[in-house]
Each structure stands twice: as C-alpha cells, then as structure tokens.
Image (cartoon, rainbow, N blue to C red):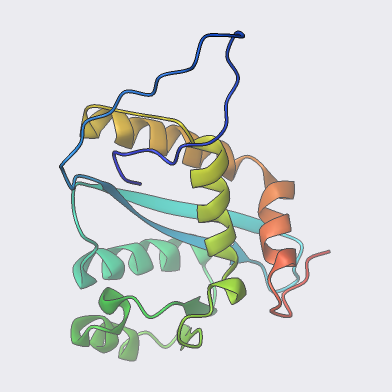
Length: 172
C-alpha cells in the first residue's frame, strides 16, 4: 500500500468539495505478502498476511512466511504464486527443494486474473483503503493491518475471490 491513496468518489455536503491531503514526492510504502488458503475439501478458507513497512519483500521474508504457513497448515500443501523476484530467487528455490510437504507452481506470466489473492488486493485497495491518506508510515501500517484482519473475518468475501478466479478451485 502506498502512502498516496487510491482516490475514489466520496460524499460531502453540497457545495463542500472534500479535500484529501497527502505528502508528495516520496516513495514510502507498506509491502504486503499474503496467502489465501483453501482446504482440500474446499470447505474451509483462511487468509494470512504479513506487512513490511517501508521495505521490499526479500527471499528471506518469503521463506519465513512459508515456514509459518507450513506450521499452520499441518499437512502437505500446494503453493500457487506469481513470479515475484523474491519467489524465484535462488535462496527461495533452495528452501522449496528441501520441503517435501510443499509443492510450488507458478501462475503463467502476467495472469493476475488467475490469482484469487489479486482480487483480495484489489478489494483491499479500492474499498477498505480508498481515500485513506496517512502522513506516517506506521499509521499506514496500522490501518493496513486493521483492514487485513477485517478481511480475514469475512469468509464469504474471501470465498468470492476464489470463485471469481477461472481456476478450478470452486468452493462449497
């Protein structure tokens, strides 16, 4: 999430144009890594995420996140992910090679419509975080965390992200 908000239409009293104040000319952001997990029986869904305020996601971050997911999932699992550099890094690939319970597959190059997590990002940015201008990175991280946790508690919304993807992961 960038410090500069996605500006959407909003409401204001007639004759009082809303003003959205923000700082310009900076490149601070909160990077987010997430996983939308579907059970083998397709009846359970969980959303996990981690925030990285003012940082790029590195292979060590990906590996830590995968270790955490492995502990949470308690079973062999498949990982479908995009082609982020940190996903394809040598260090990440070496880690994956040592994980017998984990099989990783990449989405085709630039196919965001296949990735249900992309629908979560879109919803998160365009609805929950729209028009949210923050001046401090920690305030943005706190708001992002709050909205991410709110998303975790909306199973029907998460289900809609999976069902909207053309992948054959249809949920019950």
